[in-house]
Image 1 (cartoon, rainbow, N blue to C red):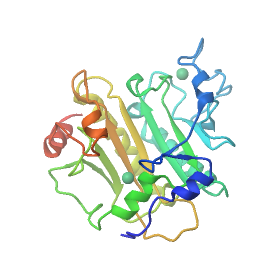
Image 2: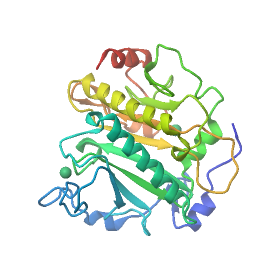
Image 3: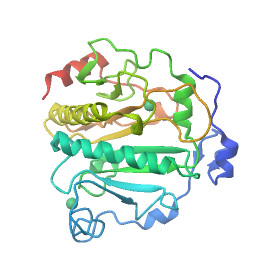
Image 4: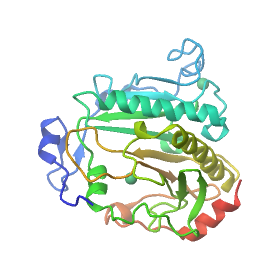
Length: 296
Ligand SMILES: [Zn+2]
Ligand SMILES: [Zn+2]
């Protein structure tokens, strides 16, 4: 695609990131987060009447009380007021409200002069450090374009979002499909993308938002059914940077990285992977896709 852009370590350093002199990787120091509570002392802060959600709500976004970034550039997004729920349990209408809120917050944060990238994500389950069980995700609004995003723009082949072989497709809802990537890094990893080149969440039209909502309910439900227990996972959306640099468009998409490789067995990313940058995936993508297609 665009091919020439590299992560801009100089501007990242200028913005306060530390750049590792050996790897060139940026790091942001957040010592204040050491003081954040592991578990809420009493009542869930996200339930109606809790400290973050005093009134009734359907969905809610608000600044993270323990932000890694200053100036309101980190937000919490509540998917539902129901504590004992998950994305997979939402009704299509409720999931659609979440998609609309992601799009609205992406546009609002992306419009700020001090924001170049809006990362919408969720860590689900204590295995990935989600300290509050209430269904929620987060948003980080970066003042740089992070290296993973720059690398996708530089590396994405024109076939990256071509309709993949039906062997790896897990589900399709209207304009959106989910499949296990050919070179999946994680067992049961999924990529979700629309059928056309839309750059960001705010660009999705009415039908595309509803399709994404129902596909997410479907996929997360399948992951939960896979080993008959809630699947811990990390999910993040990649969308266009909100800076002024012209790039060949890259399609908006979501990544879901489930943590388990078999019932109760966590897949660890360890020295072999971190030391080499090569992923060793114990589950063949066509096998993973067939298992997920069979589940529901
Ligand atoms: Zn709650
Ligand atoms: Zn991506």
